[in-house]
Length: 370
Image 1 (cartoon, helix red, strand yellow):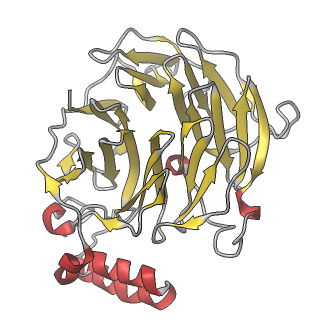
Image 2 (cartoon, rainbow, N blue to C red):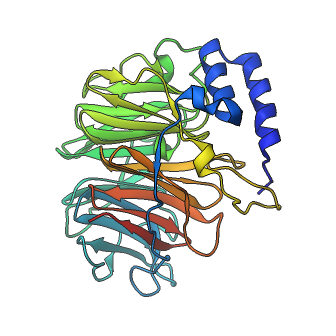
C-alpha cells in the first residue's frame, strides 16, 4: 500500500475542483484542507469503541462472509482448512457449532445477505443458495427469467424480510428474488441521467434493503437509486465521487458513505441536505501504510472499504489501513485498529444496536454495545 500524505490530499483537492461541480468541489476541498474544516460542519466524535482481538469462530474454520439480520443473530459462511464449506451461527452471546455450508467450491462465496434469521442467501456470483435457519437449499442459477442461462455475474446482493432479495451485476442489470424465483427487475444504466452514471461501478457494499419495498443502491459516482418493490427510481446525486457504500437497517432509514469518508443519511423525508465529512481533526492517526507516512482515517490508497448499520443508532465503517470507526447514538468514534495485522480487514457488519463485527483474515473482531 502506498503512503498518502496530507500534502497529497490537498493536491487532490485542487485536481478535483477542475472537474467536479461547484457543490462537490467545495465538499472535497473542505474535507482535504484541514484549516477550513470548522466551516464545513465536521461531525462530533466520542471515545473509540473497544474492539476485541480477532478470534476464530469455530476451530479451523476460515470465515468468508458474515451477515447479521437481528440483534441476537448472525450467520457466518466460510471454509475449513480442508476446503469444506461450513456455516456458523451467533446467538447474541456465543458462536454455535460448525455445520454444513452451501455447496460452493473453496473460497468461492463472495456475497451473503440475510433478511431474517430464517432467510439468508449466499452466492458465488452466478449461483445462489438459500438458508432457512437450519440448512441450505440446492444452488440455483441467477438468470433474467429465473430458468434460462446464461447466468448473471452478480456484484452486489441485499435481502430483507418477506423472503425477498435484490441483486445487481457488473452491467448494472438488477434481479429480484420473490417466492424462490429470480427475475430481471430493470437496468440502472438505462435510467436518466445515463451519461454520468452508466459505466460507474457498484460494489458488494453498494446495495442494501430495509424491506421488500425499500432498497437502495449507491454507485461510485455518488448517485443513489431507490427500489420501491416494483421499479427503480431515477438516481439522485447524494455523495461526491468515490466507491459508494450504503446500509439500510429499516425501511425508512439508510446511511451512505463513499471511499473518501463522506456520509449522508436517507429517511422517508429524503436525503440529507449535504454530505458530512467524518472529521479528520480528531480522527487523524499515524496509521501504518506501505511506507512511513501519516494516513488520515479513510484517506489511504483505497479509503473506506465497508459500511454497515445494525440500526439507526449503530453503524461501523472500516478503511484500507485496517481501522474502524463506529457511529453510536449520533456520534462517530475515534478510529480503532482491528487486530495486530493491518491491511487485512475484509468487511464489517453490525447486529441491531448491540454489536458490530469486523472480519479479518478469516477471524472476527467485535465491538460490544449491549
